[in-house]
Image 1: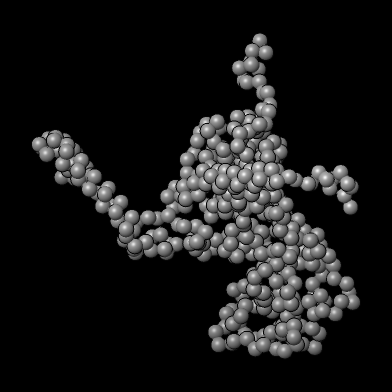
Image 2: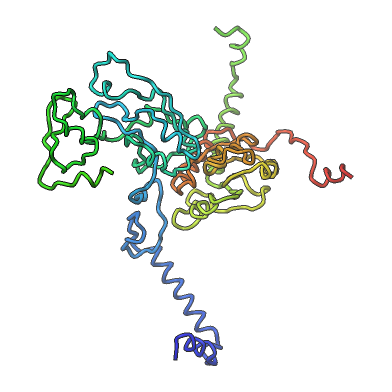
Length: 242
Length: 187
């Protein structure tokens, strides 16, 4: 006999006197409600923001928001940030990739150019930088395409903070000072790690496609000192070069 | 330097001081009462409506802020939550709903579409409801997280507390023809 048939039998069973009297079942239901009510009222409440992990007696699932902040899941796309370099300037090279792909067209960039006689290490290998980088967070649809489009890993949404509400629309205009935050990021492929002169060996060219662990190439940091990369677990360079 | 007339205008008697103090007290009390008893009118037109439900449901529970009771009649509401995209066809309706609400009333633009049009930058969509009605708080996000909405609600409560409230509205109400009158005039 299958389950559905079983259920049908159960439903079509004639009611007994206890069920037809109605009162005992009514009291039964009332007892369940009262038990849950008292449990929530006097039971100890676990303030864990992850409601499903709570262990307390109380079943109240409400998050007391300003006091208890729920943990956003990994990969949550929050408020943008412009990723700084080691020297505190944004990694952005004003290539307009993010502004172009943005479906809401909420990114506005004005590019500036480093002059040739600028002696900073980065400035010799980077031509452009943003003089204006403005995101209108009130138009942003938090799709994350700007993060995907960025070739320099210069814009991220990993702040795990939501954009706060404001009284005015002007308050949502985020410019470079408001956007530039978070830990600085460097990659082995950053152009200022490339060889400074032609005396260095040719395979340094591969640095642009090198990941940490590949070996072969001692990385050159802006300070002038060299960092030996770990060669114990090499990764084939063909994995990254097509 | 202000001229002599302006200086004398600032002078107050003890009677004025006393009434001013009382009015301040009443204003504070009314503000306190009003900010914790917001009756929302959720003007939900799009996907943000789901997030509004999430805010209203038990996990986030705007009842904790005294705004638990959605009134689907603008006459009974004092907080208009514009939840979702407002297109050109919907805009007159929104304007009418706002006009039908009684004072005091506040408006929250919920989500980027209501606040600025979002990524619907086209001929059919109103580029922000503040083009037709005044907005008190903007909540970003597409859709906003419930935390963002609660942030916005707390901002609004602070604003209401700081506003000036009085007993009895002496303001002359604008004479607006009803839809029935407009239809009668057309005939």
